[in-house]
Amino acid sequence: MMTSNQTKRLVIVSNRVATPKKKSASAGGLAVGILAALEEHGGVWFGWNGNLTSSSEPGAPQVVKKGNIEYATISLNEDDYEHYYNGYSNRVLWPVCHYLLDFIQYDSANFDGYRRVNAQFARKLASLLKPDDIIWVHDYHLIPLAAELRDAGIENPIGFFLHVPFPCYEAFRAVPGHEYLLRALCAYDVIGFHTHRDLAAFESCIREPIVGAEIDDDHVIRMPGGSLVADVFPIGVDVEGIAALSREAAELKRVKKMVKSLGGRNLIIGVDRLDYSKGLMQRFLSFERLLQRYPNAQKNVTLMQIAPPTRTGVRTYDEIRAELEQVSGRINGRFSTTDWVPIRYLNKGVARQPLMGMFRNAKVGLVTPIRDGMNLVAKEYVAAQDPDDPGVLVLSSLAGAACELTEAIIVNPHDRDNVADGIAAALNMPLEERKERNAALVKTLRKNDITAWRTRFVDALLRKS
Ligand code: GDG
Image (cartoon, rainbow, N blue to C red; front, side, top):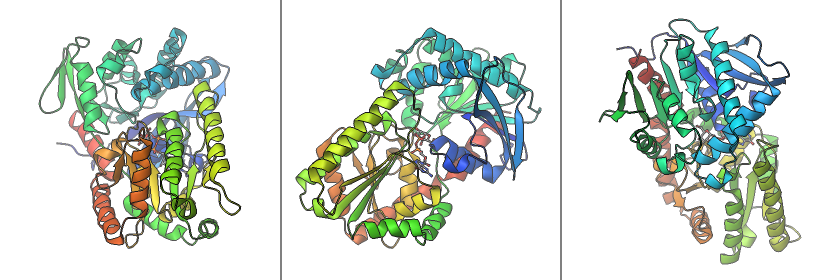
């Protein structure tokens, strides 16, 4: 049996490639995860370079090599991008995968654009492939890619990993064209999800009489003309790398200045792309509840929320940004004193190393999405702690990470009292308990780290070759 230690070229495909020049600014779990996996293993990263053109067909891929990674990128036509990315991927697939059916804005022109761009990706990628390559496709933007590659005569093993939750059939069937998506998924050899819940949801769709498949006990899905493996591969982080980065970051001027500015108060930190799935509105309101229910906290805590904007130009994203500005302003107006502002709300990103240093200095990591595939921030926060004096993770039960990080304080993000009580419990937790919980969490992080994620997935793919 072949394993990933054997030297086949790994070709990773994602909507957007974080090219070496742009990667430091990348705020997004997919890019962080792929880059960490590729830096270790080497290979090709294929996808869109972020440039828009007026020509209807993108030119040949541009290839740039840095270290052991080849970045192969294409531009996209402006209208195609609007239909495929903003239109279908982010106004239909993203909301349905996060069970937010009211946010779906379907338009058949967007669905056509989605299929058109996937066909373009397949044509451009096919021109780069070698017979021995293994292909690993990432996320909901590229569901039809394997079917398109097969149509182009590509026979290499092709895997698909979904970074967001997979919806159960009752939600999935709300999407016009869901039968097409399900059939397209069945063109892959391996499909990976973060949690057993997502796998079970996918299987609930497979059991419907759409693709005519049967599910074996060993995660194999059999259908007329072939089979695929669908399994759980929880994404992880580079535990030692983050620990080292956060230790060194303590010496950064920027981190020291931030700590000094707290004036001895406890820091509660939230770091999320500005996205409605991250539950930021509910988080601010829960923090307000903390200040009401625990008047002592008014003198003792500061919430720092870092929220770099994403998908600007999509109406729901612009709206949530305006709402968050309004509610954080209201809470600050209500509770601020002449020497304290309760919420520091940054509508911008922070570079990775100081960010890890801020995690290490935060008494509480507040990660309360209303739905999340995994949530890497939760794992990074744990890995960045000082094992001799660790902070406490307060984690939403609706994040995929809650399936693994059971020693966190688990809260329901829709219940403000529950979140406020969870934060208060974290702030008051004795040192011994904090150390025990952190040690148990780090053990889990080590077991399912970024190397395990990549190795297990690639091995599953190689077994299909
Ligand atoms: C998707 C799924 C799944 C964020 N702000 C800054 C910054 N970040 C980095 C974090 C973390 C990443 O971005 C965010 O990852 P998450 O996993 O939390 O969330 P998504 O972006 O929604 O990722 C998610 C993930 O894919 C992986 O499969 O876990 O469920 O939605 O690494 O640290 N990094 C820097 N500055 C910021 O301001 N440097």
